[in-house]
Image (tube, rainbow, N blue to C red; front, side, top):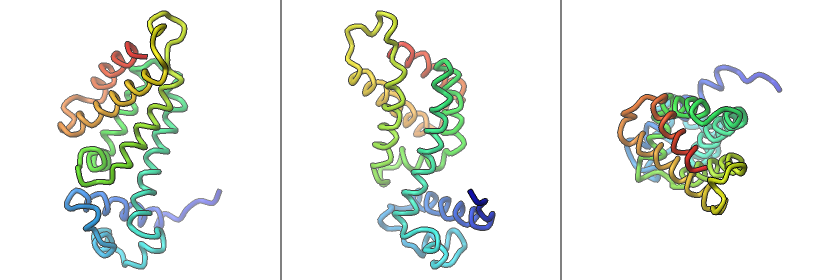
Length: 182
């Protein structure tokens, strides 16, 4: 695969940052292409070179974060809960602006939470303890729905409250709870 020009990457990053910053200031429907271009310090035409419209820009941004989380899923499932969750909470912390906008704002498209939840539920399907008797009378669908909703809910709570605990503390406590649940 050919290496992408750093200028293109820098432009795309500034457009993604601009749309998220603007979403913190006003409703997505009220944001114009000109607003995004001005914030990113590019011409309107530059945005159209990379994206079809603001919806495509936001969708590509969401896809990027979900893909990065899915990449983490591939190796994290080999670790115990606590060690596996530390990088996730560090990722949420590193990308606080994005996640606080997408999860904590009432004016953002709700599809992100739905997609994030579906991704975690899919990942939890392979984590159910089927060897011990602790889950003997439980249905897999209910277990993964419960764990997925609890996990996304705790991430939302953590972000909405300004990340009151460091990622390591969150990973340890959430890891213990997920281990009890799955």
